[in-house]
Image (cartoon, rainbow, N blue to C red; front, top):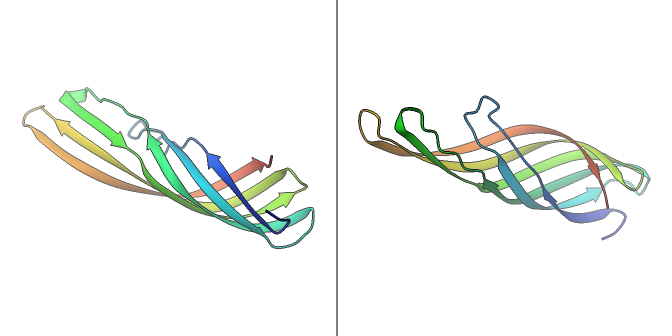
Length: 128
């Protein structure tokens, strides 16, 4: 919008359980950013929020079935704009999702797990 204030849209791929216990999420979000100086190399603050869709997986181990659904996503960053087209940043991301599961292995059981991932973010970006 101006040299000191910006907005944009983002999308990504997040995978929080590298051991295979989790599924990927695909966030789509809006972000607003304020630059703290009107220079080519300038610090900035940003906040973003949106919704993440979840991948799905059926786990057939012991008759267990899992259905995942995404949820809200929020993040806050501090960073530097370097020139007109490049950024680096550090921040925090909160991602909510849900897992409905059922098992038919000895007894019929089912449940819902509400999961909130809180992660530190280190990133680099390209401004178009």
